[in-house]
Length: 137
Image 1 (cartoon, rainbow, N blue to C red):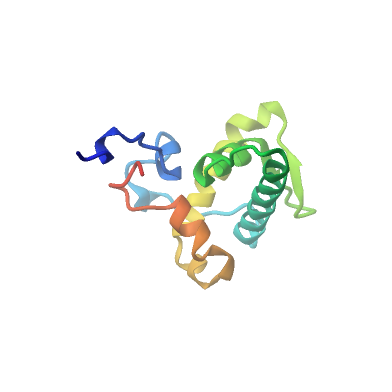
Image 2: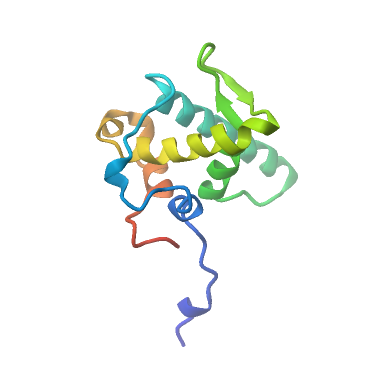
C-alpha cells in the first residue's frame, strides 16, 4: 500500500504567493527598497523563527513550517528604510507593502546576487523557492 497518496500536500512559499506573481517573471525585476534589504530581511526572519522555536520549545507547541511563517511574518512586519530595523506594518500598509515584501523576498532569493550571501544557503533557498512545477511539497 502506497501511503504517499494519502498525505496532506502542503504549499511552498511560491504557491502561497502565486496569485501576486506575474505569469512572465522576466518582466519583473528585483527592486529592493534599499541596497541590503534582502540580507536584513533574511536575518530578521531567521531571528523571528528562532524566537518562535524558543517559545514553542518551552511550551511544548508545534512549530510552524518555514513557508507559512515567512508569508505571515512579511505580511505583518517590515524592515524600516532609515533605521534598518523591524517595525509592525500599519493595517493600511498590509495590502501594499506586505504584498510587495512577499514578492521581493522570492525575487531576491532567485536573483544571481543572493548566491553570494552565506545566509541564503541552504535553509532559506530550499524552503522558500522551488521550481515552478513544484507548487506543493
